Length: 77
Image (cartoon, rainbow, N blue to C red; front, side, top):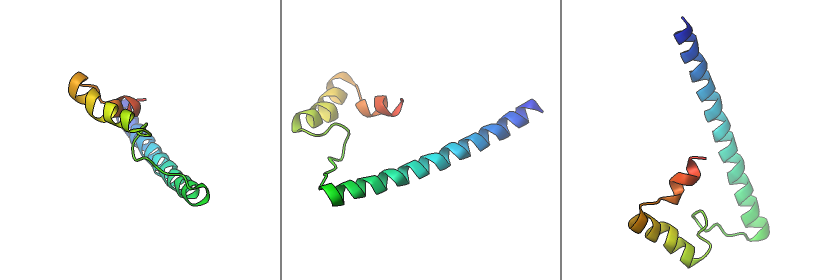
């Protein structure tokens, strides 16, 4: 019986977390649009791709030479 209650609680928890993540994503999109329209902000398309060097280093050198994918590290947090 405890297993069934735990599974039901876990599903409820996952649904709440998913709903919060969707809501948070919608807020981020609204904020991005506001920044772009009001301040002329430009999205670079990748985390820390502000310069050509960091884009090349994080997207090519780290994964190919060292097997490190910075995207996985930042998503794990």
